[in-house]
Length: 308
Image (cartoon, rainbow, N blue to C red):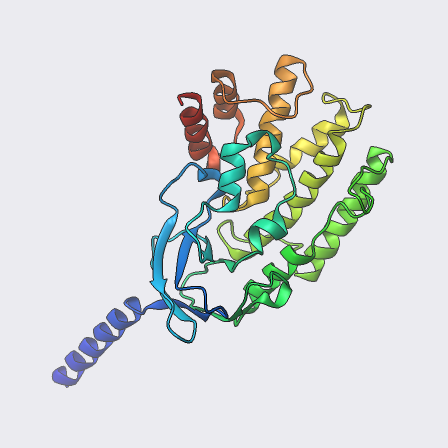
């Protein structure tokens, strides 16, 4: 009996060890004879000065197949590309930081396979071509397809700008309500109008939608000649920054964080600027007011830029 018990314990131990050592992969096929190498890159918008953004690379076989092992230390948001260039948001935030508020979803996050890595999951890209339409990247996994569908379809400015992207003049309350209505449509479509764990796919997706809507409104509102930055309307907008724990992998969170710090700087200086360059004052404001989950890296980037 003791021998049987010991044997079961050993089997149980081996079983646990095997489960803990299970390998999770990204596999796929790229439909292009010109692509010889695929690069796996991290996409950390708050850490856009990082030059070590390439996580791995692999040769593409004669049929276009490729495979990567997902490692525990990899970040949540990753992207695949056939070139070594910096991720798109890195280029904008470092080279042209004053236009941080521009719309970026489709061009930045849906040009190549970009997806959120969840724990203990493998990912298969069933199709990848260079046509840059919705079906140019098709995942086997529904969350990634939903995220890509959102990035390819979202246009919060559709009721605020004409076909030439020229600003449509309306009052700020109507403009905001139009965007909120559109935002809530997407939150309901993807069942995101609820509370989620902080570091989860759903919280990432919710952050992109919720703050993406506010960022688009703020871009429109920035050109309003009647805009005042110290009134209750603007104060209520900025209160969304502390509303919940937004996901640090979100591009829209980076943009809204910059809006928030700009807002506080404008209050401090009694000004109406769209952007403030890195300065000791900006670092001080960020130290006192930025959210804890991005404070360290945001201030580190400001310090690096200031000392260039």
